[in-house]
Image (cartoon, rainbow, N blue to C red):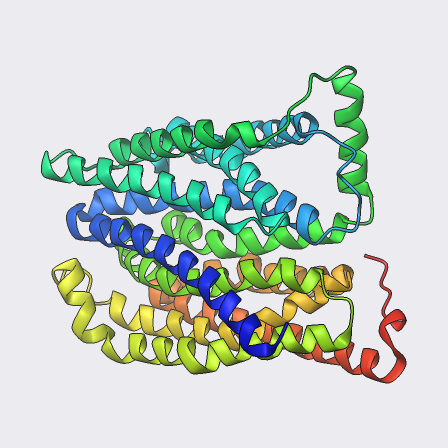
Length: 414
């Protein structure tokens, strides 16, 4: 495939992803606009927890299906689904001591999380097969149901955290039912033994560092908001939550890029194919996305007050800091796909573990007490710049080794 055809194919899929993200962004901006400050803070905590739960469990299985080396095809879906159910129960008891900050919505948070995890599981099978049409069809149906229900809530003045969570559960539940037939679920004999065997393969096998890395990334992405709620007040949570929502819209573009390139890089069989994929990606980043990020930072002082009706003026500077972090991620983080390609998972796990312990466990609580949401944003920028840049350097080193010693020279104990 020529570079132009390759870029054209990627651009079409990328456009589908952007359209899906645009629908979700409209809903997110509507939440900022119409919810009261206290209600919005509660919603942000609920949404952050849903993201942690679904991403931690979903990330594990996404990585195993797409980037893992172990052959999981011999297992049917039921053992996987059973393990995810066990992990949800474990996380429920982990979050139970914090139930007061959810204002009575913890049960709904876990209901939405459970349904989304099943939905992610369905989508993962499409992603592995590069069946992006089915993947985005399921996503569009979910988002359209969510959008229509959200508008009805807004028109009838019924918007609150509880009702939004109920709508989220309903939309993802309906979409899952429509596409669950794509999964070939067989009747399982000796299911318990298969679950135990699979647990051993996952958590004690060659993919353990990949799993642990995925978990750390998820908690790093949401722990700052939870710590802000624990060590500060709702006002600071609402300010940071508004800024983080705008940042999340930008970051979803970066996720779209990685979502496309991870399976494609995994299927490469030569240095030339990797270089083609990365050249195409860099062209997309430089030509379009970098300009978008710069414009977002420059125009945010004029646009954000129009969205939130001037309720969160401090969120402008915080968003600009977070968007700067996202710009650096745009440049460096796609190279992590090369690390996953060659299963250098122990290295990247070690890097992120050190960052997590130093920044989020020891430093961030003290920063929150002194500098509130602004301090959280600055720490966020520093942390993600460091880990993404070091990952970039590691990936470039891998490519140099391949160029000098050949494809077979790269072999890590992951």
